[in-house]
Image 1 (cartoon, rainbow, N blue to C red):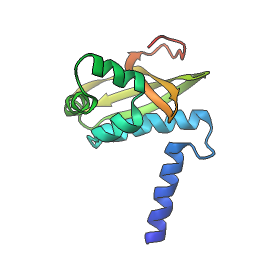
Image 2 (spheres, rainbow, N blue to C red; image 1 turned 90 degrees about the vertical axis):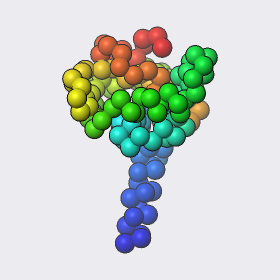
Image 3 (cartoon, rainbow, N blue to C red; image 1 turned 180 degrees about the horizontal axis):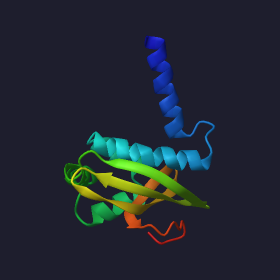
Image 4 (cartoon, rainbow, N blue to C red; image 1 turned 45 degrees about the vertical axis):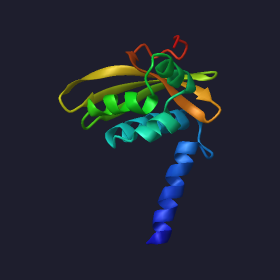
Length: 138
């Protein structure tokens, strides 16, 4: 049983970390990690593993720390859902068009923007209009 759990944990870590995964798979795994962390109200994971340094800097310059901002965010989201559609990668930028929803909120077609950072793909913006363009400014 322990071995099976270890294999599952290692597999999940590899999927998130990109062990042998294509760029598309890495982007998809990062978006899925964002939704899972949001559902679990895991602000530490959001701040340390999901959000891009540029987004963290914008929060900081606005006078709010990441974990505080994410606590406010996750409190507003109950039972998030996500269906990832088209993923577009252009150099160090990516966009994932997704159908998102949450309990008590209308579903919406959104473009989640990501950037390749030193730690792998990171989310730079959420809820952009679903244009599907990886070249839009963040």
